[in-house]
Length: 186
Ligand code: AMP
Image (cartoon, rainbow, N blue to C red; front, side):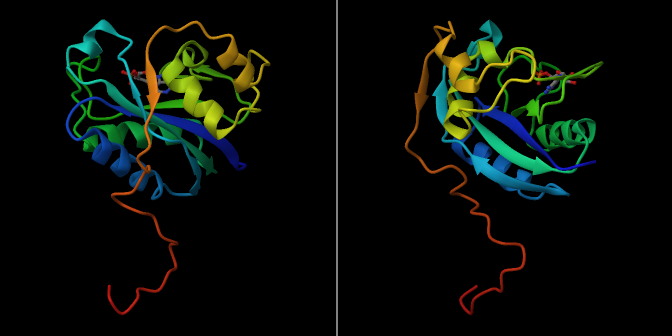
């Protein structure tokens, strides 16, 4: 596969949401044939689905920019395995969730297969996706709608509340270069 820029949304609304999001970023740093090249702020967001509201907590959401030579199918399969590893409830997938990943964009590819639709069909309708996307790459063009992320956010009509948090993403498990030499104190 040629190298592509992808955007992966993550969200958690149960347990220690900050720690779970930090862990999701740390795990994305370990993906084969891939590099994390950007991480948005965390946003606290009102659940969109009525069932998501039953968990009590609002979500922590964010987006990772990943440069990857994985296929989109392989990437999504690994992300789904990671959701399970982080304790995702497979029986009630719409209920409170420790971790939810969405493959939002994969270069300029448009994919419509069983189990994989890219761009994610609802990304431009959700404030909790568009705000972090615009933070990361406002000029990125949506491959099907042919409008920039900035333009799509301007046109968005989603009343759900989204608040940018001042905490530093990934601070529980800071990444370090793969070939760094441990210091004497480690
Ligand atoms: P959810 O419960 O919201 O995590 O949705 C997961 C389901 O959506 C799975 O069956 C996936 O195969 C499917 N799906 C289709 N396209 C995507 C995508 N771009 N990103 C994540 N899941 C997707």
